[in-house]
Image 1 (cartoon, helix red, strand yellow):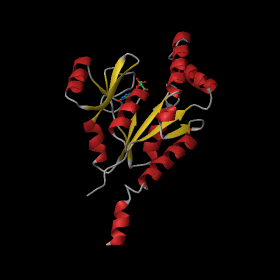
Image 2: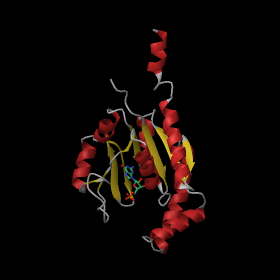
Image 3: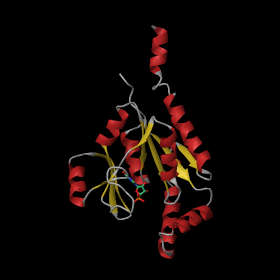
Image 4: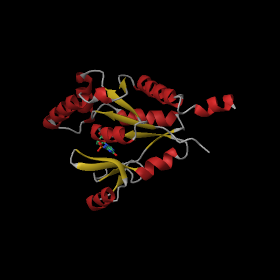
Length: 201
Ligand code: 5GP
């Protein structure tokens, strides 16, 4: 029987580059997969249903909440987002590690429900770098930019609740850091017990 995959929670303030980071990790490591969340947000250009998100309407999302389908869910920037238990278990049951790329509210729910989950908070190198990255995206006006930077400061206050902090200054270095966390988790005593038991028989 294949051992179940580990669960990793990755959170960061908007503009920190966590999507590129988790995508880079999954691209170089077959045994890691990013879970596809459900959301009521409208798809952006280029986003594909079932690949970037499962895009659903509010009635469907609320029905799923009522059915207890989500491990966690939150209302973020005016839309629902949630991780379904089905999605996570489907990946874990293949022995593949699963990454939940979710906000800090969702991270707190997962921490309570899945004490074995490993949580990682991604930091920008400086506030100025974060500001520059948000500016470069060109999707925010001055007021939205100020709001996102203020939200980022509030999210940093929660960073101390996470197991690991990774600074995303240089993408390849940050990807390596994340990979080391994944590898170290695979060597946890609880994950590696079969090796010990076989020696003692
Ligand atoms: P975006 O709309 O830019 O794709 O994501 C907005 C925020 O929602 C990001 O912080 C993202 O990490 C978060 N998010 C995405 N999926 C989930 C989810 O399933 N649960 C929670 N709690 N947050 C999510």
